[in-house]
Image (cartoon, rainbow, N blue to C red):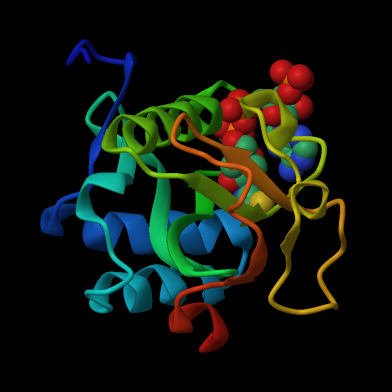
Length: 177
Ligand SMILES: CC(C)(COP(=O)(O)OP(=O)(O)OC[C@H]1O[C@@H](n2cnc3c(N)ncnc32)[C@H](O)[C@@H]1OP(=O)(O)O)[C@@H](O)C(=O)NCCC(=O)NCCS
């Protein structure tokens, strides 16, 4: 981490960042739904993992944000797993590595915490670079059959075991936007 101007640094979000995060998430997606989702996830104590909600800062400005939140995998048991998203980088600052830096940092922190796996619905061309692969190939079913198989992806972490198979369920906030 560095405080040099124009050097990208990644750190956990703090309440003073919430307004800037709302603005940047809205701008990144061109609508407010994902920014609302961020707020709802933060308000859900079962879902929110403060140390896995990160901002990317450049020259003192917040230009990116990512969240990993608690989710459930319903199989032989109910396992606590993680969901990634939303991931947002301010338009104008995209394609300069901020999304990669945020995602890598979040995944490293999750792995260090001993989390099992991370699931997301995202662009099949973007996420394989981090080790994401189609979730169905690991026996993980999407919460809705409408989700395209190629976009419903999982990254297994160090603590992953093959028995972690079943139906994935997001935190309720994902169904409220
Ligand atoms: C998608 C997003 C988070 C990527 O972050 P970023 O900082 O712009 O991207 P990075 O600089 O970290 O990564 C650049 C790489 O990602 C690729 N990339 C960027 N956006 C992409 C997209 N939407 N789909 C596929 N690949 C994408 C670039 O081609 C580049 O790959 P390359 O180096 O192999 O050419 C950002 O563009 C964004 O906020 N988009 C709008 C919101 C969104 O779609 N979020 C993700 C939902 S799944």
